[in-house]
Image (cartoon, rainbow over all chains, first blue to last red; front, side, top):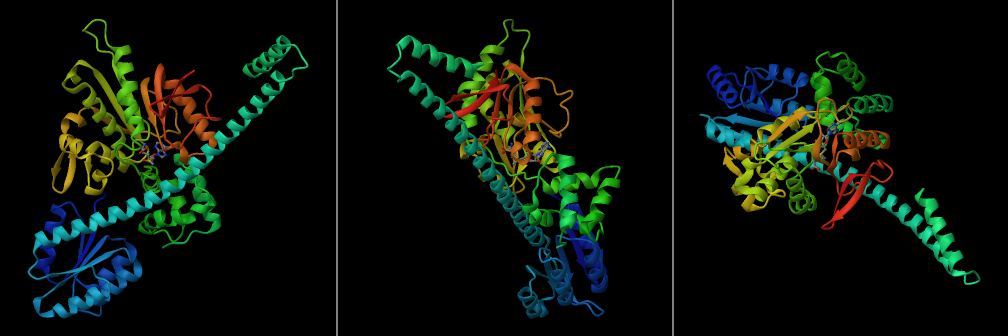
Length: 191
Length: 279
Ligand SMILES: C[S@@+](CC[C@H](N)C(=O)[O-])C[C@H]1O[C@@H](n2cnc3c(N)ncnc32)[C@H](O)[C@@H]1O
């Protein structure tokens, strides 16, 4: 499975550093930024599998706005919002607008890794489903081709069988002559 | 998602054919868009022509490889179609073991098996399991060499690693074999070393000459030629005929046929399965 690419947006340097450290230790490709503006700029240029964002950030682009930018850019990018206990309502609102999940501060990393695993699994499954569809398509075409080939071969054989039957069935001629002619026909095909 | 123009469609499908042999007709427009748009965007390309030019200019061929990884269909499963593995167990392997068993005990004649489009490895590991089940602990008396090759770097990497997720493992693998040959590690199923030590994976493009591959006793070339044109299929099976031992075995996909493709092979039937041998 490919390494997941994650963007973290949070104005709190401690949380930023912590997330960067823990995520990269666990094999994720992490980029961190300190505000929504920068995050939005990055999202426009680069593709991320997951964006983890604080809900409240200074400037014009907070978590909810960033969520919208991300989803407009690529609906397949998953967004997890980080929230203080006091603003659970906003987190629920974020989920209605398309975030997959929210995490409460202080961040429980076990929980975060579990959710990221789930996201990775779903993404792998989606890719597999696409592959399966394409494989079925091509395999079906191949089967149709093979059947057609077989029908042509069977048709040829039937034709020869009919010819042989006709030759052998001509009772106006002596059996030896019929057999010789039939063998001749077979011989010609062999050669 | 970046849309592809008819002109770009032509250029890109020709390019993909050139680098992988994979033949895509105009009906695969959507497939190309879903698989290539993220690569294009990531590289900052505003259209597919730019992507094509970037890929052509990339001396390290990383973009080319990314395109191949994205476009190749790696769909596979353990013991796919079952028949070929029964065939292996009850006919092909016993016959070969008979034919290759050394007269003197000093020399172990190798039995070489090749999975020619091994994808993420399930086919070759299934073969390894069949061998294990057949010879049991006598494995050291034989010299089995199992090679898996594929054009996709990411597929080869996963195959070598031998690690599968829950969904991959649940397809085709019976419970008893799962428990016997895999261990659960960090949410994934890992092939045990006894199996992994039997196999080897590496990258190979079937469109290129098979130099340095050597000869094989058994070749599995399943569900890959169906992505190629007739011309390319002919060339491929002709090359396989060249590297197969005179008494070797070829197994192809269950929907495939060599009629009209390669007359050097003769189809044979056993246990309701078809395999091919040289004329
Ligand atoms: C559908 S999978 C088949 C896997 C397995 N043989 C089976 O039957 O389950 C097809 C594989 O062929 C590989 N492939 C496509 N073109 C190839 C080429 N030119 N050379 C080698 N492998 C190729 C793809 O990367 C993919 O993994």
